[in-house]
Amino acid sequence: QVLLVESGGGLVQTGGSLRLSCVASGRTLNDYSMAWFRQAPGKEREFVAARSPTEYEIDSDAVKGRFIISRDNAKNTVYLQMNSLKPEDTAVYYCAARPQYYIAPYDRERSYAYWGQGTQVTVSS
Image (spheres, rainbow, N blue to C red):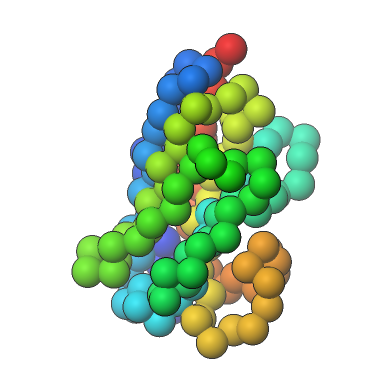
């Protein structure tokens, strides 16, 4: 069992930056691929970025070049650095984990077994 707790959300102006953190407990993150998803009001949850234990990274087209996912396995923490934020980035952001041996596209929401409670990010125009 992996427990994930996100933090770092808040209110920021267009063009600003935020860094989200996701701390895991129960298991070491060395064995898990980690991802961030987000859900805007009235929309389905969508993939943002993922990073495997071998540091393979994939980002969605919506955030490519602006967001960076990183992980600190020693701290059992994954981060999402968000730069050049836009109002359309407003959403609840979720951290997710799946075993590293799980074979599926990284953007497949159902492939992730563990989820955090989410943290709200609001970008004002």
